[in-house]
Image (cartoon, rainbow, N blue to C red; front, side, top):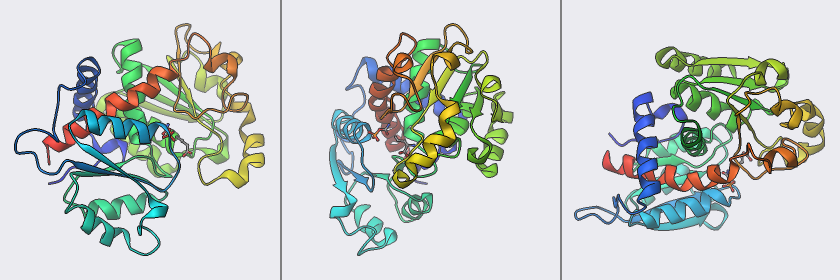
Length: 311
Ligand code: CP
Ligand code: NVA
């Protein structure tokens, strides 16, 4: 059975831990695993497709695939037939005969599911409207490096609680046995189905879920504070309205002061200083956002190597 990574819970708690441990090894020894260059390895090319813009995801996948002995083929979907002239299923049936894996940043989760259903090679979600699971592997790796163990830590996400990052913080965080809190306006909290899925996972791992519109309750004593843009890709026209809705949930010095004294700050980037995070916080001593950005590379290499070894 081909393994795909479309949502954070596609890795069991044990598997997530294996991938993070491998990421730490690959950070120390970048060429330790060569799944695309090993004797008897199949195809070397990995397709990396973008329906939305990207800096970190594009560079980290391209670099990581090369480090693993493969050859990245970065495709801007607007310059391919995918989505306009050809269905997801038909494009996938062609790609899977030529490439070792497919990485796709897109809008709807349903497209990724359709791709995975038609692919005998691993399909990886490089961000959809619903989830950003590769980012969470990098975030958890960063927390592990700075805090040691993940299990038992409290991780709070502030801001747009209905976006891809909020969903992935919930699912990946509880998979690691963390206590995940979402502080967001009542109208912008995670979907009930995502909260249910996170609660089910938390029951297995000893983690927990708290969703609240009370910023003080969300942040109080947290070990990790995270936020994300209030205007995700595709929502640009709602910028003025969203800025007004989320302004009480900014990750600023006042919010940070409520967290644990040694709390660290995450932001997946790109960041909008003065909106979801203040310059003082993102550029301050508790911010680990540049480690987090670098860890995209190590975490995704581990994920790719892990998936290729199982396909
Ligand atoms: N964090 C993240 O996914 O960044 P990019 O949009 O630049 O890829
Ligand atoms: N929520 C953001 C994440 C960007 C990496 C977006 O989807 O635009």
